[in-house]
Image (tube, rainbow, N blue to C red; front, side, top):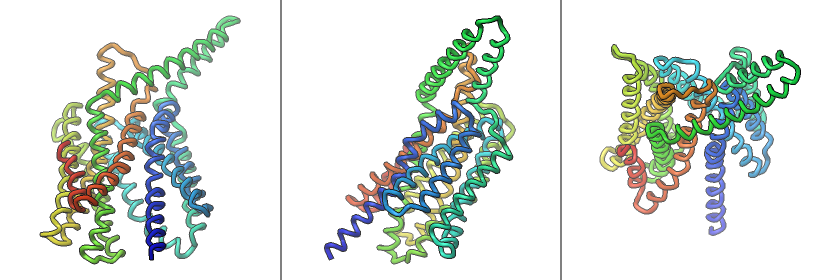
Length: 408
């Protein structure tokens, strides 16, 4: 019996390490993904992220050891970081401020649809085709998606590519000058690159010092910490206190995904609803209010978790439903708000007489910061919440993390 208990404990530890590895790698690679997007283009970053996900999926297919699975999971996290930076930056670059909410809502709706359909399709495919063929099929779909993206959008010009084009023009113009000007042109291009790197670093530092951007990043950490605490503790409580089977527990938890899917398009519309005014100040205020409402809803979700002693299992239905609504509302409003804050940051610098290149990389670095906050919340939330739950009970752990939402 002791050996069996030790084996079970070791298996749980390894499983925890396996799931945490994606978040750790995603948090680690997010700044690099931001730099990649800033120095190249959002199109190229998104394309490379899709190819990276395809490679990670192939690694899952051929993995035969825990180390192999762990490496594949880490590669999945690194590619996911590039997906967020490239995808969100692309939307921010190609949509005006007044239209970004609906665009972000459409992107988040697609994500929610994948979360709903992926497990079902994957489970059916796993039963019929087996593990290896299922993962290879998924990798082929990702590769086809990447090819389709190239066909539909090309590699387009983004924040970083505009700067590279200007450097190329500098070189070409220098070749038309008198003999010996090639050396001068090369030096000019090199200096321009150095100035660009300096400008990117200075701009990133200024954005990190922006209190509004830091506030949204802190809210991102808090929201995702609460999500990651509620889901695992709910599984334990539903089993131990209500005797719910694993299948029924999965259905209850899936309420959050359905609520998320239904909320995202509505949240996108609310982000863009101008109610007669469509200036920058009103947009910032409206989207900031939606972020605040999402934090209140997340606190409500944690509160209903604690009310299960009086309401019963219905408290879980309401809790996970509010969790999905809060997450959908937050994802759309915070993504739009971050882009608006970058636009305001640029406008203030222009008013101060600071001339910036088009490739300042602001969108990509801000979304990289959001990705770091997201991943950090998914790591820190369960550690703190589960620790408090072991000491004082499940309700205390969940409500303690949820209370941070109320404070913000």
